[in-house]
Image (tube, rainbow, N blue to C red; front, side, top):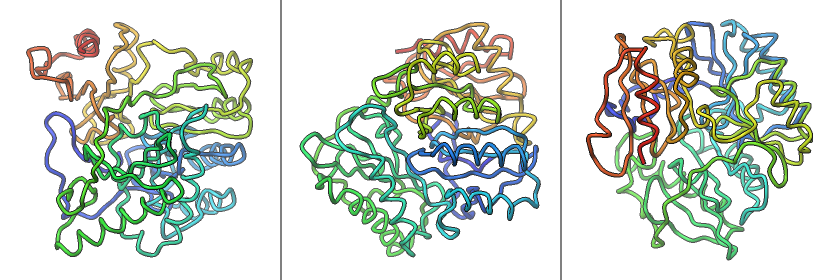
Length: 405
């Protein structure tokens, strides 16, 4: 599995900043139980149809044929041969997916996927931010986990608690939020990307000056002023599934699709795909009559099902650290006791790779079954006490936890 995410869930330990940042990339492959893993950064989740096909071809030729959307709207290829790095890099360069060898792991940018109009064109922000990051020598000092979020005013990606967040406002300004601060600083929209870059550089400078070690801005929030403007609670809602004004939105079970299904997705697109942090895909401009083809191919095209906002780490057999085949167990649980509600994430070990932000249900494999814990609920109560269950009992425990409000 990929390296440990910063803990926010139940039972988490303090991150170890003495170890190196081992976050995988397109050039730095990670060795997993099912072969090497490559993570291809896609700023704003944006792909052209040609680039999406190039990824499918790479997955078929070099890996296990599957493409996996991450919780940051990037793509992972798995089951790669350990010696395929040069060929993979060549394929990515040819399709424009590897613009910088030195900066490829710091191109961590999520953006509101739309479709429809927000208060700013955050995709344009994402393209500018990516280009300027890659052109900034100092930016190689950022960790592979440092995240920028560009919110068009809906409050969707702002809820991800990125290191640097820009939130578009209706008056032609943007709010610059640092880490998980409850306040932000207004900046002109035309200077928003400059302000975001400056905040990232200030973070690096402050950490070095203080002689401290940190991967995230929130770890050193005392070193940078947060801003004077109070922030509301962010909705954190993904685009609804189905036909929307301006395009289509579909979901993938556990964010994974084989290359054949991926090609159906590309065929339905109107030339552009936007992968989302909720492991779905928005197709701007795609006509509503393509929705039936996508549903027939196995994509989720309607809201309200138990699968909505249900995620899982890789688990066995792909990850040697896992205690269970969590995706198989999660599939049985979602089909046996369907219940929408809070986001839910199954983890094979305490790393909890890919878990969501905010409020969610933590389902952790223990070796004897699972521990089910609502995380981030408004107030402590008997309803949020961790519950130890067998695998057979887990479905009902998860359904009950997801209903907590």
